[in-house]
Length: 617
Image 1 (cartoon, rainbow, N blue to C red):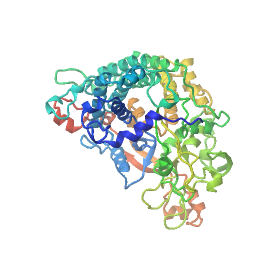
Image 2 (tube, rainbow, N blue to C red):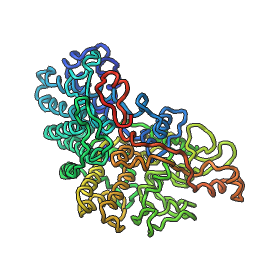
Image 3 (cartoon, helix red, strand yellow):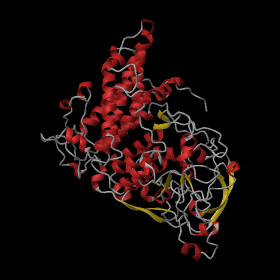
Image 4 (cartoon, rainbow, N blue to C red):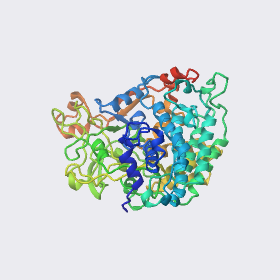
């Protein structure tokens, strides 16, 4: 992979957090908005500050807020917040994912930049350069503001639409009395902004500018917002029929509109037809590596917009298993529900007749360890012949990682006295992973924490082409009475990257409902641990099914009675393995209809009493 030096985004990461004054982007000797916008260099730093508010869900706690994983750093705020969300104990005054005030602060900064950038004095000898870049800067800020509004939209639905610096004055309470704009108005604003700036932004960026907004990014955001508003949460949902402003204005359109799906499909096709993106595919003979490598490299074949991340080993530190060869902290345990969602490599879901899935017995054979194929032994048949993305995303009992350096497979089954001798530390050690699995996605095989060598070089893909392909397939499947060739085409393109069989396979795949299930599962697998699942299960209105009730892990904390019943030495590894492969409940989660949208924070309602609260709150 070529090494790309990101000048602008390096400035973003190094300068944006440095100031706590007015815009949080200037040295301490500058304190006013006029100071910032009388100097083009400071104005560029203000734009960098806006970029710094882009999402980054690499290793994010949001994976534990849904049916992907369990957060077990019990002495950590992330686990506490996940606990609140999963038990339904978050509230109008305590919402760990709300960020209402923070996003409106970002919007205010963007509004000021958009209003003032054209008037910033430019040195005479730099006029030609800035004639090109100032319009781009403004278009980038408009994108960022639209992205901020999308973040608010998928949390709250209808929100106040504030597009002028004068709209938000934190020093004048009289200017902060707002009402909510409707969902249609918010979506219309975001899509119109994306259309307008797509005409200004370049198709691609020079190497030194990778990470800046492009035309493709604008059209990808348009696709995401149109797909969201076409989805059941916002398209014909009767829950929100009575949410109106004081003047009677209805904030949610509760009439189903099939054409919204066509608009989403058309938007996705706009991105596809740019013809400049392709699925990451450098290792076609190794489907595990073909998927995994894109998450620990800086390749931009598939990525439409990356969030630039400086070199670090944070993911390796938090996600690798706990055992001495790996020296990680095992932050998340993937749930058995996610493990079971990975199909067999013949294309059958594990619960379908013909899948050949079995839970008893073991197998030995070649397994990719991140660097090369090695022989793995005593692997449960539960993990035999699964979708290659499973092996790229999840550590399981006796799976391999850099075998030449680690000298053994991973061990999550309990064995030994005291805290045990496993990579999960299965008794009571705080902050470890005692439940049978570990997240593998994002981890770089270039990093050896045991030898303290290597560094992570990766970015977070805010948008990538696989999402656009699945967005098109989903939208067309919902628009048509039954899936057509184009629906299969774009799902199969994503599957073909990992050598999964082409759909249709089951008779149900030829129906709208059956293909919907396939597409939703494809999202789940393709974007595991990327921050998508939390939002997808809400827009599909399935969170009450998948994020409610008992969720499971493996039996890596067995009782003495269970170990004794094996007839083996209760302190032996064999006894721990013998009782491991049994799903056990880790949490009984709570999700009700009111949780589909977040509540307007009470502090904001106190400030602006005309803000109408969301359903159920």
